Image (cartoon, rainbow, N blue to C red; front, side, top):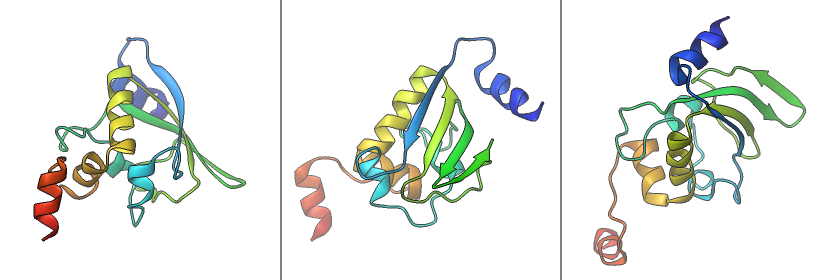
Length: 126
């Protein structure tokens, strides 16, 4: 019942997407390179406004032969994890941005805003 409440609290009566999300180098390159104590709850935040949680609920986490149903936000992600997620399509796209854009991942995971342009990154690295 708690899982249904989480889903309806997140998605309401709107049609939600269901998809898998792989925490791998090819599935989430920007996150994979920063995997150190990253929790599921930290990951599921807006790459434009970090304080806003995404309208996404994790239905399952698969790690090797182990499966966790309805993992909470405290689960620490590891390389190779596969998540089954349900949520709104606009937040699915936001999560895809976090997974593929290093500056978005940096902001979501640490709160630090880093410039995206080559010039900005070059100046910051000096």
